[in-house]
Image (cartoon, rainbow, N blue to C red; front, side, top):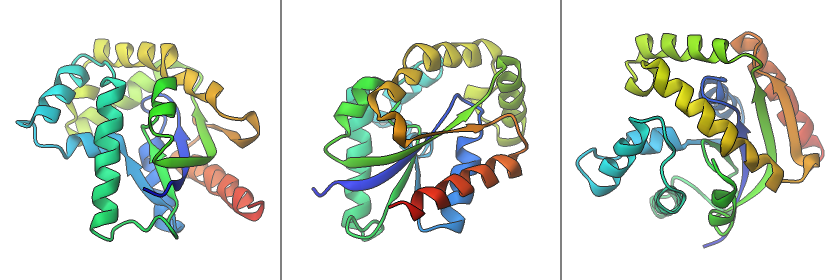
Length: 198
């Protein structure tokens, strides 16, 4: 399979990755791909669905090999059904890679060109945002403060290390504490700059 060019949108849970990702894909030619959406779309009764539920309900990350396999299968499905063209499309990845090992595991599928990092300084902001999202979207993984705190520990211990696998020159930091519109504007501006230089 030909490697697909990809940009990453990165940051802790509740930093606005999904919101920014959807808006960025709607205003550019990027194809937004959220592993959270992929996982939530898997039948809960399937083997993969049960595996995902057993980890996400405790605020833990799904094992790397399973995540990479589900991701690769999903990408192949998009290509097979003409929803993704490896020759012309660029992916905007949200939620993968989440560990340094996943960087290696998905290297044969995607070629990461640029990374947007949404930074949030205070955990209290994240907890408040996620509890609020749970009320609006009915997402169980956002409704329990202890699970949220687990997710933040997982993010710091595992996910944040992903950035060390990429060249510093392709990483762009964005202040995620701003309003959603400002965060989107800053990300769009970074994307336009990236586009000019490629």
